[in-house]
Image 1: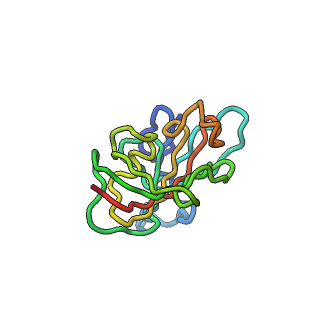
Image 2: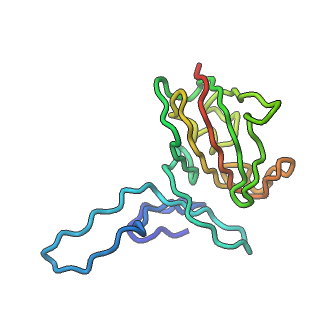
Length: 177
């Protein structure tokens, strides 16, 4: 993939670039006027498309550390301790397949319980594992995970996740040990 002009270097499988915000117009001005400041919105991410699929919109968010395409948006701020690698974390989670808009799993559904795991050590898919690091107790975060950092080319047919499906999780930290 190639990087957009004025962006950070492109990665090997995804294009993670800083682009000019569509809301900021370029000024055609006399040289005496200072240039407009760059847009301060977060990165725009466009996951690669399998052959024959229509173009998707840019996915906006803060890049998750250690990932190559996963981004997150804080929906509700938390407080206190933050999730660190190796911590035992209990979360509420709701997962939606971005392409179809269908929910495939939620700990808030009847009969489901909050999910507990050890953060940052590979017990869950990479995008979730890295996208949750740094969350604080009580924080809610949207984590958008491209196929390569989710279930990959195999997908997860039993849950309705297609090959290379983009996942949209809403995560809420309930407990950090």
